[in-house]
Amino acid sequence: MTDTHVYKLLSQADLSAAEASGVTAVPLDVADGYVHLSGIAAVSETARLYYSGQAIVHLLEFAVADLPPLKWEPSRGGTLFPHLYGELHIAVACRQWQLSPDADGAPRMPEDL
Image 1 (cartoon, helix red, strand yellow):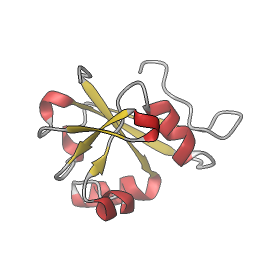
Image 2 (cartoon, rainbow, N blue to C red):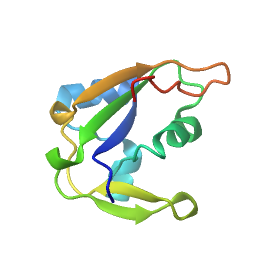
Image 3 (spheres, helix red, strand yellow):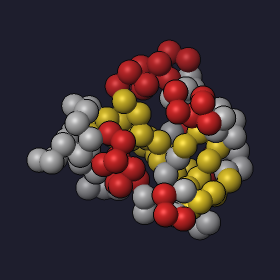
């Protein structure tokens, strides 16, 4: 893939846990054995599908060059998603946003994304 950045969505509780430990440990990631990330084209839909209705959602941006090699694997309808088979250290995030819900309850993406 040619994406230069990938994105991780976290609930408030997941971000608090990641800040305490230094790495993300979302239950779905732990169960699946890899860190679920999104490319720029899919992050908004991922937020809508999995984080709608939450008062606060955090979006972290990571430069692909700063991460261990990612595997781009098909998911939702064949769309390729970046997966990290290792730990995602939040200290290497290059940007972070706190997303609030839009009128439909889906996390509102930042204008500078």
